[in-house]
Image (cartoon, rainbow, N blue to C red; front, side, top):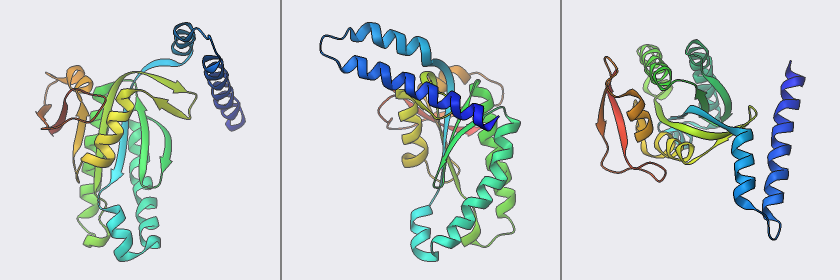
Length: 208
């Protein structure tokens, strides 16, 4: 199966690259090519970016090996939760996950479960070994290239929310996620003062 997945991802990337190359040619009908790209790769997903709060500062204080241990522990604890909530882990870069979900509600439930598991884990750990998680979520039509990556303004906004704006234990979402989930039983949001490029408004999950 691994070999077949490699072929699928490679074929998708190759097809996208060829279409982009066509788009670059003088006189290319960009609108038509864009339509072909969206027909081939356009899908609706909720995208999650996770990040470990204070990671860079901690590396300076405790050393990289200590925080490689932290990353391994985070993966051990969190990856099973992603599967339980029907998420697809596309990639891990450093201390960050990129995950996609078909349903926004499952993405939020997964986020809350991740926080619950880590808070229980942290109860018996010294401060330097605690794992502090930040999460950003976006939702909408995006280009999914095999199981390699996703691209859209919602992806960019979710990345900014999760990796740059969120603080420890924050679950920050774009306006599109909020619109999909507002009114859901048990869920409450508060609007943020500023929103990153890619979304008009951003919100914090304050109860779930």
